[in-house]
Length: 205
Image 1 (cartoon, rainbow, N blue to C red):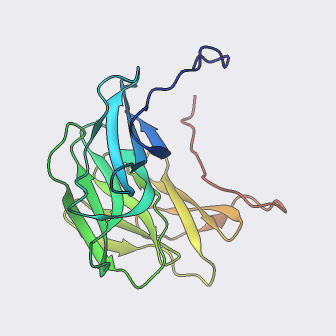
Image 2: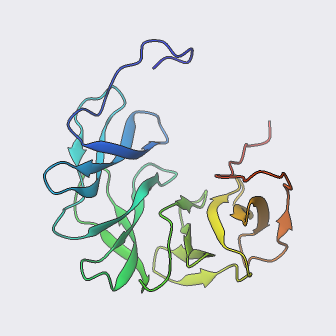
């Protein structure tokens, strides 16, 4: 729809129930996560911002759905998402070309801990932050993992700062920040009585 809320129109007819979406960095394409009608699995589709050419990218035969989020790399060349293997023994951080092709498993962790589907690319496209078992982890594209948090409270929704130096995240019901290098310098920046979700950085003017 337009910026004023007018001219709303559907662009994902036929993809199933949409549960998440993400614009490509150049604004020409949209990746959506939807329940594929025939198999009732959560799958990734990509199409034009005008609704043209939507196609399913994730093969139902390869993974069982584990989440509702997909993230574009900063250069728009790769999608990242989290999934479980069919036997549900592993949680996988995966990447996938937005034009189609086989998904690549970047990192695997045991599926015996809770996991939310949100993940975030570093600004240079070299690392991916995600939540696993109530802690924030970072993996590079070779699968080298780092655990940045280990508090008594659960942490969720890691988001990189524009310069890549910090990660904002939710701990308990407040937003915190920390060093993206090693998790040091954790600092609470909100203390509202309500709960905060999905921190978002704005570049300095």
